[in-house]
Length: 463
Picture 1 (spheres, helix red, strand yellow):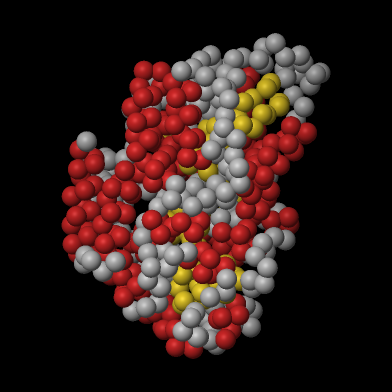
Picture 2 (cartoon, rainbow, N blue to C red; picture 1 turned 90 degrees about the vertical axis):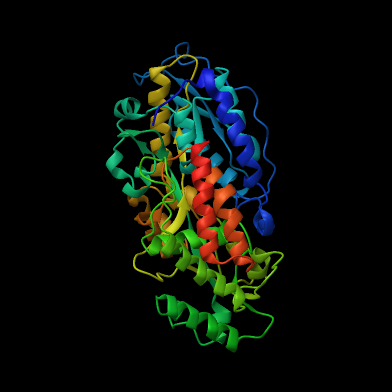
């Protein structure tokens, strides 16, 4: 991936993000969780503060030494988290500052919908933060524009052991053999279920797990039993009718079938495996047409939260919401393995070191110490439902003592990330969503949708 100068070309990416950020707010029928779903775990609708100009100057040089051998370093840290995620990240920053007197981190919370635009603009103007957040799916854009920098030299200085991270997550942040980000989680697509309703339908085992054969036919039989045994007002499977979550389900099943990425290895050609894409889309279309998923559901989150849906699928970020819902007896698990291999959709929050007007080795080392510490203390971050990026955290008793998380933590190793392309979000919005939505509405056949997606992806890649 060819890296360009952030100072000369940041406007190119700014314009690109301005097009996709509209799709990161409220996408069609996903209004139920517009604060969490499209933000991929950004944490709800709590107020977030706008960011002041970053302090990108080198204040480490003027800071006194406290006797430990390293000068004191102040780091500006830009985040996009609000709600529960915002509180958990602030708790991590506070604890780090308390235990690392020589490194003090100032957390500035930006509004999710403005974050990437402000980050790109600030870096391009030479006023970016010392530390930032990036989704793994957006990292290729930031690398391409020279916003995100390689980390290996600073990581070596800070003693970071890359082998301590989940390799699947680490691979998503590695480009041309270099690490560009420190993964702190994966927020994957999983399944939630209402224990009372499954028990009423005779589909809950003694240990509180769904009774379901892990196959395409087995899942349909499971849904059929739910529909037959439960009152008509109960939705067997709560899912939105458009955009993010049905796309995430399609991507998951397409990946379980062994489908290619939507683009070729050289990132120049559309490469949809049409047969597998059709099979996955046809399966999901039938879930709508046969009445397992409620049509025109105005709020599928509320449907599950109110106890009138037997199962739902969405991201792990919903775990905290269901926990705080009085009277909701639920469980969480990976989405069922319907086809040949385990796979699910997911993204990852990562920590990056943006380009600054003056590179300061002391700050970069301190920033890597901070990023690695956040990953090491992922049990705090996991309170919102995210899966920690380090296997060692999953073995901590503090993590094991939290309900639900251990039931789906294994999916971190088989989340299927998209190819590292600067076109990922355009393809999602202007090809995948556009035509798959027509399939879910029964206005287009899966075969027609795959043909149109193939053409649309190629057009985007040619731009």
